[in-house]
Length: 289
Image 1 (cartoon, rainbow, N blue to C red):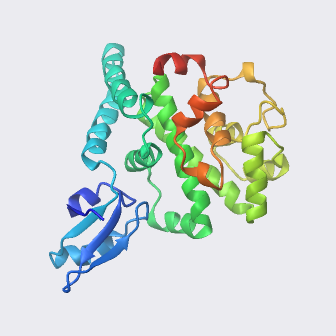
Image 2 (cartoon, rainbow, N blue to C red; image 1 turned 30 degrees about the horizontal axis):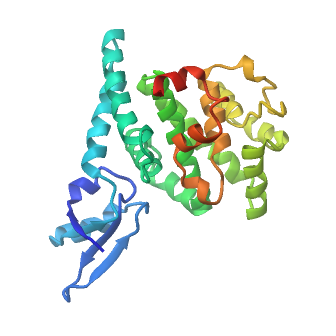
């Protein structure tokens, strides 16, 4: 196991541990503090920092690269003038192609999940704890879906920070609906089948849930997220040729990522390359290629 030092300031950039996190006790033995992907509790880590204890990390993502990509993504989202936006978009796309499209990158999904958590995640500690305690696996799945949504929208040229944040937050808030269904493993599998094989999700449950949602935009985008175009049994009753790129991204992202099993950690480009090209916008595929 190869360990490298990691600073507390580097860790503060993340809400989840970018790798397996260790410290060494007085005997020189390594002690695991957090596994890769575990939520970081800085009130706990600060106890080590105050004692000047060095932390080590293994199986880490490339922190320096992700920090640089964070800066590039932020610059792209801050661009207002059309020409400026185009320049930043081309630079951003160049990094995406080299890092994720041209080769299969094993950390792709994890890196994007961390990146967009850092940029958009604003749930407080109490809300986060509730989601983790309700169903950590399912919550993690929605973090992946939210990252996929924002990533694909950025590819398409949507760069307004507030719009992208609203799409990210809407996706995570849809987890409230799943939580309220009090899903068992068998029900999770049933909904996973719906998302992947277009079987019917109970629209009655979704309608009842959204009756209590006051925000009309949130109602609409949540309905889009769970729409089933091929079976035409979603709430909106729309067909494939009646939707725009934003709706297409939401439906694609939610439908292709399994709720349980190994596909929950798959990279969005894997879905695009394998079997979902026809559903996604042809504009998107042209931009990547």
